[in-house]
Image (cartoon, rainbow, N blue to C red; front, side, top):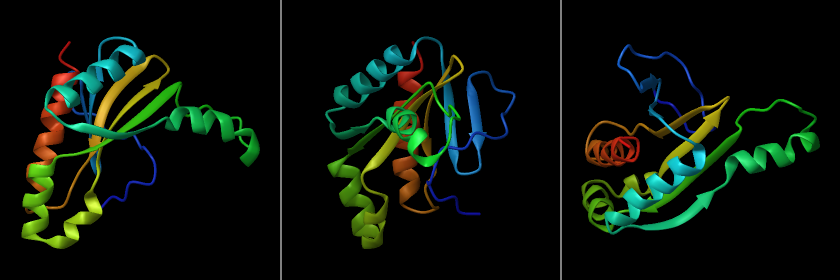
Length: 146
């Protein structure tokens, strides 16, 4: 089943401490505060020589627009999505299949929900994009290994 990234959905958790898997995404528990998690994730991305194209402050947007759409539900205490690309990996996966452009830029999110901070990413289809997924997994693991 393919999961389209239209929101962040948390589902079944595996027994492995600090690891969660929902249909189409993987998250890792961060032992610390949201601000520290975003700093650690940003540092890992930059330390790999990558450029962050944009940080989407999704949690702030949801909080700000809730009243406008008639909702008082607090979804996240904080939530940011880091968008970035790897020239090497992007070229490789797009040379294999130019339609892989639809997966660029890559995204890793940090969420804080009732004091539970997580770092995660969505899954990609089988084939060349699995190398990108493994790359995102390595970044998320490193950012949560404080």
